[in-house]
Length: 256
Image 1 (cartoon, rainbow, N blue to C red):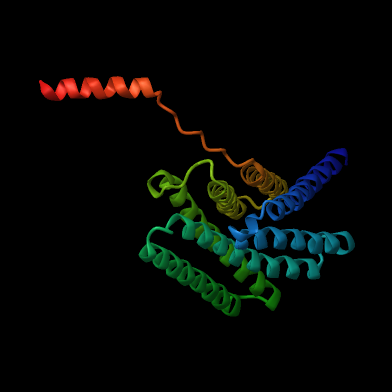
Image 2 (cartoon, rainbow, N blue to C red):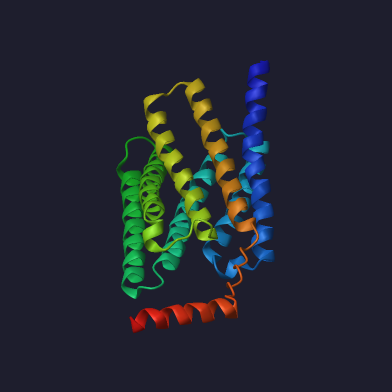
């Protein structure tokens, strides 16, 4: 009984604490006016906070097993997936801002992937065996797994080629990409492990893993978006006497 209480307390802490940090992060984004640079990510943060308030309220009154909680979780998860693709599109727009062709191609590719995932989820929900509740949850699960895999691949590609694409490791865009990449990678791994291990103990450990990873990702966003902007170093001023010496030496070299 004591172990169960500790597990529940830890799970609640890992569920609540990231959203407390998200509230702080939203305030930082607003204060530093970063919402003009990353409007979709700002909407993503605000929506995550709103979803937490809704789900925590339903959990408090119904518990995780309540039907209303399950439908609210599935519906809000679909919107989070859509906003996640929007954030990736936003980051890619900054990366490819020097090339209009790459910018248009990246946006078109993301739109096609999002439409394909939505179509697959709807078809599976319609033709899956079982009652309507089973069909709905099966469709959402497939869409979530597929979206996590696509997002993971896109974000890891951005991270691997960040140097080539001109993305500085100190810029806020890199922090956003890194956090989403870690979150998507863990979602993919957790989905595979849930299919392999179906015991209650394994499910509880995976819940702790995903919620703990979420806390790490929010901390990364706080670190990058809350850090003070780097002040460019002042240009080096070469003494006039040293310039004259260089000129004389150059003239001497050219004469010979």
